[in-house]
Image (cartoon, rainbow over all chains, first blue to last red; front, top):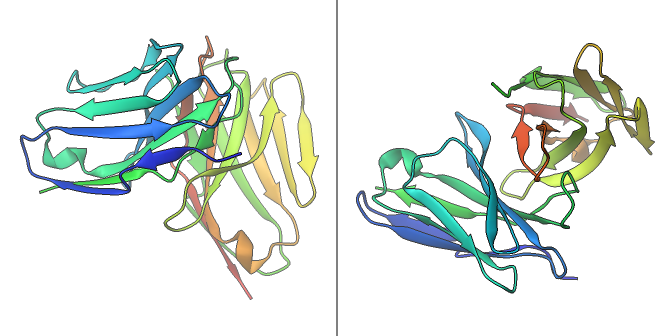
Length: 113
Length: 113
């Protein structure tokens, strides 16, 4: 089985722009979660989607949003980018049951200039 | 709020020694505790996990122990090898599940030949 795939691998944006990141889960996995990883804050939960519905959301501003499609693929969007949004954005997929094993993608490294 | 503390932040051992990383969680309803290994520039990979109905779990050179009363859990690596060098993250699933993990800050393990 192919692993979790995230595109693009790298992104460079400037302040004020918006960005969309994509995640394709492992085949058969219906839950997709997003995490932000920074050297200072570690891994922080952004949100989780299952069957096109957001089931849980972390403590991030409304500029961070996401969605999931019927084929379980997910996108996250960050609007009005700030310098502090520079981070590695990781997507993880799992089977539908809560607290199942999470499998991470390689992430999208976002740099905001 | 939800919190996971992880210690130590860095750990240096000689090849063949044992390494122990400890985590403490705040949410007494947490019931799932995975450990992830992240090598430089790579995705976090699940190495072992434990659920709250089990006190200890082993997988070859890796073991995890859980003390629900004290709300802490530990990772034990025996007979360390240079390829064990990486950042290790503990995590706890918050009450309510939905695949939301709260991560510790990470431990950078260096195994010297």
